[in-house]
Length: 425
Image (cartoon, rainbow, N blue to C red; front, side, top):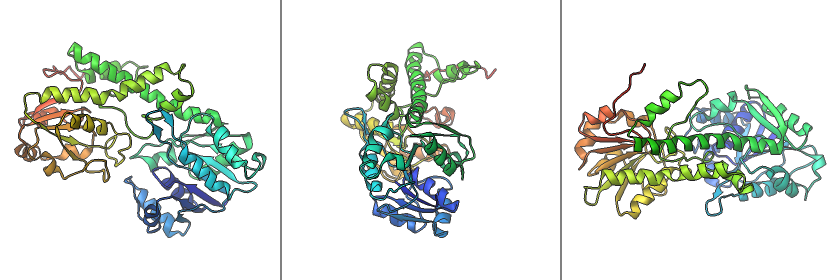
C-alpha cells in the first residue's frame, strides 16, 4: 500500500490526506469543488483549524499530496464525504457516499483496500457500498473497513493523532489491513471489530452526548421554574464521583451530535424512544431562547437584536446545523431586526457584518457561540453604540459582572436574575 486516494477534502478528509502524505504515502485528494482543489494545490486551506495549514503546506511541498476533481487508481481508497440529514424525513442522506463509491468503483482492482470514514447508519458499508463495488469486482478480491473519525473541530490535528480508533472490517483481514495503515500516525490504541459494530459505535458515542445534553437542557427549564442557578446545581451534582452532567445551551449543532442519533432512530423508530425524545428536546432550545429574548425586550418597540456567534461552538468557523440559524429565523418571523457578528465564520445564510456595525443602535446582544474573542471586547464602546443595553448569554460564558457594572442588564440562560452565589466550598 503506497498510494492512497482520499475522497472528500473537508474537515476530515484534508487532514487525513495530509497526514498520510507527510508519512511518505503518495496521496491523491479528490473534491468536486474546483476552487477547493486549487486552494489546496497552492498550499492553502479553505477551513479554519489550528495547525492544519502547516500540515497541508508540508504535504503539498513534499509533492506527496495533490488535489484533483476525479479519483484515479490507488492501493487504498478512503471516503470522507458528508452524510447530511434529510430534515423532513429525519434520515441520513447517503447520496455523497453512494456517488463516491460509484466514482472509485471504476478504479478498484484486486487487493485494494476501501475505507469509509463518513458517519453512516449501521449496515451501510455492507448493504449500500459493497453492492456497488461488486458490480465491478467480487468482494472476495478486495478489503473493506469502516474507520469512523473521532475528532472535534478546533482540535482536529491533535485528536487525529492521539485519539483511540475503532476499525470495523468486513472480515478480519480487512480490519487488520486498515489497522496497519492507520498505525503510521495514530498514537492511540486501535481496536478491531466488524464493520456494522464500528458504524454503530460511532453513532452511540454522539448519541450519548446528545442524550446527556438533553438532560441538562430539560433540567435548565425546570431550574428556571424553581428559581435556582442550573450551572451551580450541575457543578455541585458533578462532584459525585459517578455523575457527569453536560452543559445546557441554545441547542446542539455541528455535523455529528445533532445528526448522528437520527441515523439510529431511522432504522429502529420504535426502539429509539429516548434517542428521539432527546433530539426533540435539544431541537426545542432555540424556541426556548427566543422566548427569553421576547421577555427581555418586551417593552421595546421594534427591537434590534444582535447575534454574537453563528458557528455551532466556540472558536471554529463551522456553522453546520448551528442553533443560531433557527433562532435568527424565529426572530425574523416576529419582525425583529437582526444583525449578526461572528469573528470566525466567513460564509452564512444571512449577512455577517463587523462588530461595531452589528451593535450600533442595537437593543440586545444574544451570545450563541462561546468565542474567546467575546471576552476581549471593549464593553464601554459597545454600550455607547447601543440604544438599549441588554445582554443575553446562552452559554454562561461571559462574566456577567463585567457587563453589569457597565450598565448592561444581563440575563444568563438558567440563572435567576437575583442569583445568590454559593460558596466554592
